[in-house]
Figure 1 (tube, protein in one colour):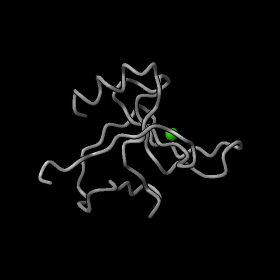
Figure 2 (cartoon, rainbow, N blue to C red; figure 1 turned 45 degrees about the vertical axis):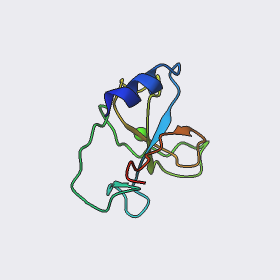
Figure 3 (cartoon, rainbow, N blue to C red; figure 1 turned 90 degrees about the vertical axis):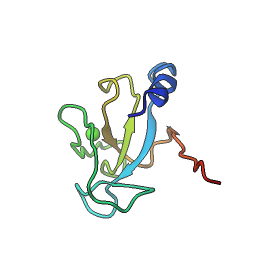
Figure 4 (cartoon, helix red, strand yellow; figure 1 turned 180 degrees about the vertical axis):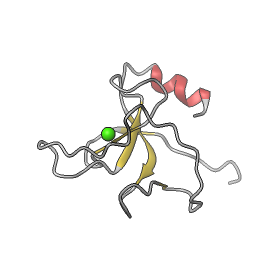
Length: 95
Ligand SMILES: [Ca+2]
């Protein structure tokens, strides 16, 4: 994870952010929104992704957050995609 991004997120009091990774197309097959390449870097928190289904949420855990104060710093956790979180955008520098 880019150090600049982490500094912004970690300064936000433990708020979680979407990182643009999900396995909606197939359980356990995580894909980036902006890449089709299957080979990927990963940085899961210990015991994640666990795809736990909580009764208070209708869906299983198919989207990936980080920055949550309950998740190890810089590490990733899969959670329900319907939870409203802030998100990180990527912008092309070529135009
Ligand atoms: Ca999880």
